[in-house]
Length: 304
Image 1: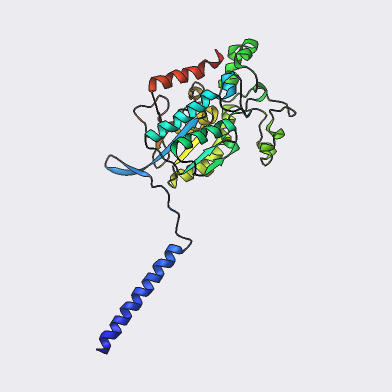
Image 2: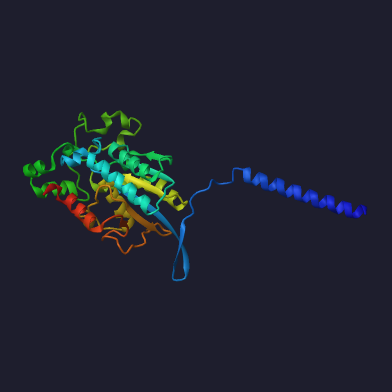
C-alpha cells in the first residue's frame, strides 16, 4: 500500500515539473511573436515557400497633373490621385489581401496614398515605416520645371536622356536651392553624404536596395506580408531587381499611379510568373487590364 502511494506521489511530482517547465518556456525570451505563415505551393511534387509582396505607386499628385518634374518636392495628391489610392485599396480588399506592416517614403503623396489604401482595407492599425530611401528619384535642376516646356527648350532627346536613361542624372541643383534636401529639416538626421543634388535611376536603385537588403527582404522571409507605397522610380528600381530587367529595358518601363502590383515570390525572393503579368514584369496588376495599359501609356506620353 505504501509503495503504491509513493508511486502516485512521484507521478504527481513529475507532472508538476513538466507543467512548470512548459510554462517557463512559453514565457521565456526565446518565444517569438506570431507572424503570418508564408503559403506553400506545390511544383514538380516539391513543396516550396511562397511569399506575397504588394507595391503601389502613389496616386496622381498635383505636380503630376501640372506635368512638372517632381522628385523630392513634397506636393500633395490631386483629387484624382486620392480617388486612385482609394480604388487601389478597394481592389486589394475585394481580393482578400491583408498585411502585417507597410512601408512608404517621407513624401506626403506616397504617405497619403498608403493611408487611403489602408483605410479601405480596414488596416489603419498596422505599423507604418517611413524611410527617405523610398523617396522618388531626385531630379536635380529639373525639379519644378514643366516637362513639355523643358522638351521645347532642350529637345525631346535630351530630356528623355535625363528622364529615362539608367545612369545619366539630370543637371544638379545648387546647394542654396530649395530643392536641395540638405535645406529641408525633414532630412536633418540623414548624413550629408547621402543627400543627393541629383540622381540617375542607377543611383536611386543603389540607395533603395540598401533598405531592401537590410530590412525588407529579411522581413518578407520571416513571413511578414508587406505593402509598399512609393514612387515611379523607386518602384522601377525594385522591379528591375526582382524581375532581373536589363538597364536598357527598364528605361522603357512605366508604372501607372494607384494600381496595386502583386508579386508572388519563391523562397529565394524570385518572382513566380503570373499568367496575367504585363511583360517584362512577372507580377500582376489588379484591375481592368485594358484600362491599366491605357494608364501606362499616359505616363509614357508625359514628355511627348
